[in-house]
Image (cartoon, rainbow, N blue to C red; front, side):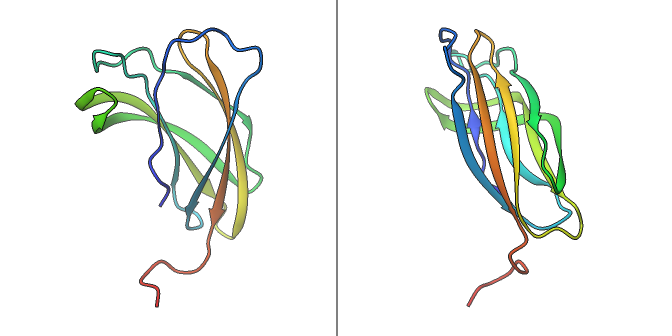
Length: 132
């Protein structure tokens, strides 16, 4: 299972270069692996306009899908508890794939900030369960 990544929006000037964020995720073949959660939390703990997400580098051995959902969090920045809408990105490999696949996503936030996220997804690695 991939770890939860919350990316919040903050107003900033348009950057001369688009920053690159590198992340990793792990999961089993032919199952949804969460690779990103994208939302916009305002200073008053309400939701702002969601970012625009574009697939700029598709994976060679799978597919990426984006779903809309509600994200609940506690103790996030100044917010003790919140529930806001967000986009959740999932990667699903081909059934017979095992190894590392790479997905590149461009995220454009309200206010002009843009970043590119390169996500390395490790698929497989043996059966899930208790390790000795």
